[in-house]
Amino acid sequence: MRRRDFIGLVGGATAWPLAVTWPSCSIAEGTGKVWRVGVLPGPRGSEGSANILERSLGDLGYVRDKNIVLVSQYSEPNPQSTEDAILSILPTSDLLVVAGTLGGVAAKKLVTTKPVIFVSVGAPVDIGLVESLSRPGGNLTGITFEASAETYAKRLQLLKEVMPELNRVAVLQARGDPNVKFAMASFEAAAPLLGVQLLPVAVSAPNELAGAFDEMKRNESEALIVIAGLFTIINSRQIAALALAHRLPSCHPFKETVVAGGLIGLGPDIGAMWRQAAGFVDKIIRGAEPKDLPVQQPTRYELVVNLKTAKELSLVVPPSILARADLVIE
Image (cartoon, rainbow, N blue to C red; front, top):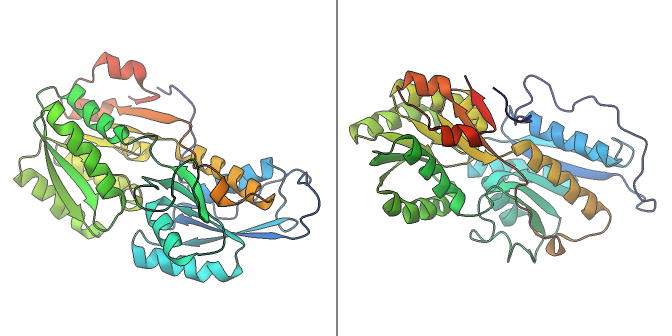
């Protein structure tokens, strides 16, 4: 049952760049240059994000090869690959649009003068990307992944609503992901209030996931919660399949993981954030500086429930959750 329309993160097999017909140029005259925008949406398979950015810039009147050129570079979800991707695209770019906390941290390290727009960063103030949300103060600005630290706690609360007797919760995290510290602080504040014990399990590569789930079962975990990051989104299907195989009810920050078989998810509409990024590109091209552009928060969150998974796990999802859900998979 579809409660609201949504735009997915991944654009299927469509190759970048997407062929679209853009309207005639309506950008303010006088810039006199073709802007080159370097786009780092993540690993191969994230072309859909770049496509959304391109279409959104078209809606704002930009015309490919007339007043703007978008060039994408892809990277694996680890710091070194992300930094290599930025360095490869930086010399020929006037500004960068980077995905995720890994992208934001790498850009902060490597890009000192050119404007950078980050998309879906967990805690840009806490990790030092900007001075404040209202006054970034440097050459970076963009869109956060979370509206507040409490969003992680709300995911933990959702699991508790589905499983009132829940005591032991595994927390899947990617080693080296800057999101982890922020997320764990939120979980650790909420866990005593909910009466649950957190059991963190860290992985560095996809081939470690099977062993991580074996560890969860050895630790007698009763459910799983996943920390957001590039690693966990690109490995959504494997994580969902392993959770189901180990009979672990799971809560996720990405809709895609729930569609793939996870139990429940709460997170921002990733496509909407890439549309927000187009607005930042437009403002910078028109003369604004990142330091003066407030960091934006997600405009929309999605609550997704997979009733097929609930049935397989012999769980009953409370009507109060179903009534709030944007998408229920039956």
